Image (tube, rainbow, N blue to C red; front, side, top):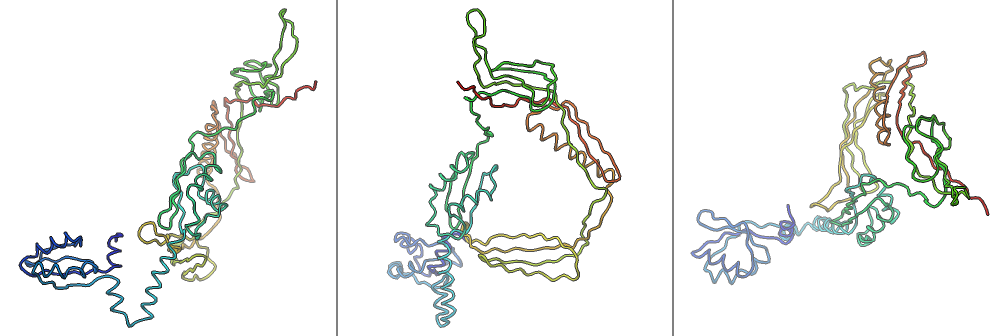
Length: 402
């Protein structure tokens, strides 16, 4: 049902049959007067059509002028319904209260939806809105979409574009995030040395600022000075006059070793469904909720899956009413030993995730070795990687006091 059909039902309309010699003239007169009949059909040589209640009250002169006779076939809509049940005062009062309640609820916000957010979760954005006193249940008149857009851009620098739109009882927030990952901006003015962040063998070195203290092929240790943040100032004869502290800048790539170690117990617990099920449903209105679920006998464990939604009327007209279906599966649990194939799959998974994490950091993997060892205490999964990575780390240098 669309809005046009809804308004016709609220205002009431009748379906009539035209009898006489000039039904076409009557239809032309209706269109000329702007009465706009609809669903015009020809049945058994007579025309049938729908007219609004307001339009029907205006057609008497047109009927006389066209020389036709009208037969009312059906009356539809709220006015006829209320007239039919006019003696049931309490029922009519409740029916009217229902529409008044719908109107009052349409003045409030009952649904907030985010679209386009990847880096920031819905919960994070919702907490930001809550800090601005925007949440489900507040009057829509308190929401300033332009101010909300500005606040979101200020609170989350990675958001480059925001659009907030009120539609019905829903607030739709569309977000576009910066695809480039922002890097922290370091202070370029403070002098600093570059030291090794870990042990390794230098494979390449590009110095842009500062004085290199190591060369390609050198074995370095963690904390060793790689590039000194100082430049020698010499006179015309090549003699050093003084040293000027600068911020060292270089790319130092070394071959390093890294790895992981993960322990597993000999046994693990397994859960599997027995085949028994429980079904129920829940209903929530605002802060009140009701759950209806068949009782269970004994102390068995159950896993529950809930599926539901929010009630809405006519598109974006959301209501603070939620419903859902609950399905429970009875589970049994027992302890079993890890098999070798299971441990191998877990080892492959640990190794894959560790390697992916290295690649995401821009590390080049040269060798990748993993090993599985069993002992009386459990399983030990180890992985050893030989990689190429940048190892320089800036360390501030204090300027000497004059």
